[in-house]
Length: 398
Image (cartoon, rainbow, N blue to C red; front, side, top):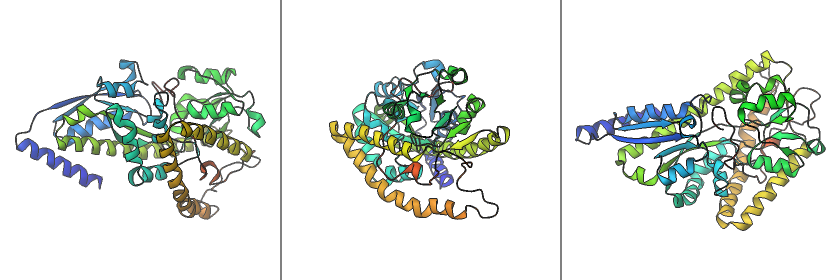
């Protein structure tokens, strides 16, 4: 499908040049992440390569990274004002401006990547997103997904809700708000200082992303408990495109830009899965003391209750927030049931067969209980945000 799309758009571009439409259009793109960010940092470069090739040179992109623009969390304002024609970011960074933006990146206890994508493309998500971003003069092109994220690196096991009392935890966004409600002390620590803070005991735990992003920061060297996730069952990224800049492009170049975003996003998503699997295998071999843990059932239940309270409070204040929340919850109810009897059932059923690893990777004696459905419950969820103050930053931000 992608090769056919690429070829079709390329032929369209060649045809436009043949008909005399050989004007070169130049767009400026700002990224929330540095080019050195694993996997994520490749997306702008790949987008640039694809649009320039697919347009036969008629569309050019200039990319600015945080090291130049100095404002990784200003992508919404950059695109709205037209200071940049396109920005590459994650929607939930802008919860401080508009709480509804959280639904288009990640929502704790809610949809995973497949569920979110299905809801977005066919369940009304794209239309709801347009309602949120139209007032900002912004058109959204989805550009990949991180997939399931982990729950963080902990120096001590979490055996009950009581263990969260006074826990010094670096976790941003709504996940941090939820943990705070359960008694954790949420710390804001710059990325470059995270390892030292964890090593010295300034913080007791840190939540980041997944192995491909976590391993370079070295958390596994000082915190041996790696907890499974609840706060971000996936993480959508977007291109925020200034509507006026988009409308100045011929129709074929608009289509090329959207197609290139989709292709670059798919590569980011697939590469992320591959690299997570590869690096996790390396990490386990090199650091056998690292142990995967699930949060105990009472902790998961308390986290879920707190997130629902936060979501429902916001929904009571904002009718559109409620509309999006209700839409996601409605699709999750049926999407999760399908997942249970398909993907989850398959993984559980093949576990223990010769040559297959057990579905439950938790070592004996773990305080947490592993349940294929527990960390991604069909119950209501809460949404994660970055508040534009504490991005997970590897050269810039997550």
